Image 1 (cartoon, rainbow, N blue to C red):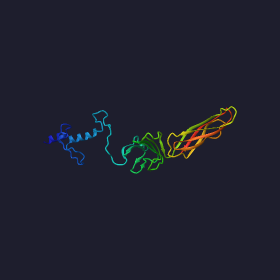
Image 2 (image 1 turned 90 degrees about the vertical axis):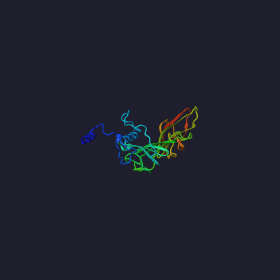
Image 3 (image 1 turned 45 degrees about the vertical axis):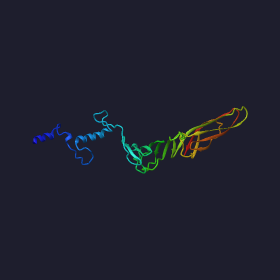
Image 4 (image 1 turned 30 degrees about the vertical axis):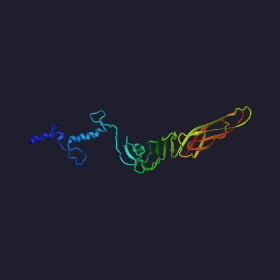
Length: 257
């Protein structure tokens, strides 16, 4: 009898069938009561979202399916990638948007930086808009992003450019050229134009500075800026030219809001 029992316990195959061995399940984690059914249950849960060892791409994920995970802004993904704290990537979702963040974790009331030695960034997608996010305050937490670029998408009346929030500085080009077709008389010629910013400013610029790149010797002064707003500004200049003379001013603007 003892030899039979020892032989049964030590053999690698042909012992009790899994369908004949019960499962204690002290943690109450399974619905199955025997090993065979428990293995089927565990493998069924695993293979629902992974490829099995006897399949191509063994162990890799299939489509990741998740139920409702909570209320507010919930965490869907958290990966450290190559290990740099500043590039730790997270994906959140709330009732309106999906948030992809680097170096920023939502703690329930504010964004918490993984490392205060680096800026935080990300982007947000919703049904009605897309938005790029940036915060360079280097504080441990921050309630709102210091600079954002938002693209409204909700209606045909929406602006087609990004709407900026936070500190803004834009540099662009403008120019004027005059020609007096009169052969004799001096003429006072008026000219002007307008500039449209590449993105919509949060407010009208607090300053617009014009800097010449190339001018003719007879051009007097810089153009004058007028009616600045969130979308751009106008400019004009008056120049007094001799007959058949020409002049020009080409330069750059720096707008700050």
